[in-house]
Length: 118
Picture 1 (cartoon, rainbow, N blue to C red):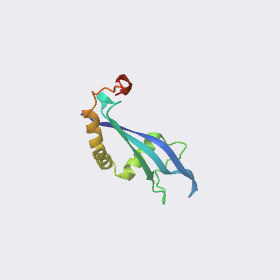
Picture 2: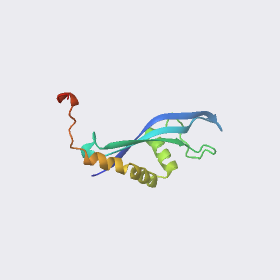
Picture 3: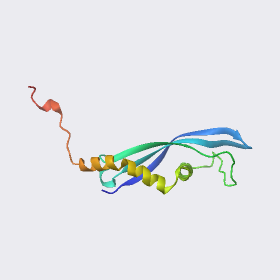
Picture 4: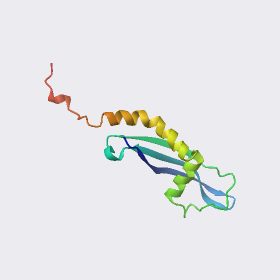
């Protein structure tokens, strides 16, 4: 089983104004999907994460909301949560589900209505 992941921004909450800057990203809801690339429909699980970014002091690298990309927001969130070790820990929590789905990947669903009652 090979596990890959992708992340997606779901919601972005901004502070309208702070320290002369406008629309500062403060809170982000995002999702990480872990999956086996060969069996993506049947071997996958998702984690929804809520990240509050540190906006107490805005650094010189502040990027205005109108110029920031989803990739940059995801990177800010990932860095805030702990980077690659956060992803490894999160994946570890999802491993049992992924393994179970992988073991069951070749099963076929059969409708009970095909069987006689009684």
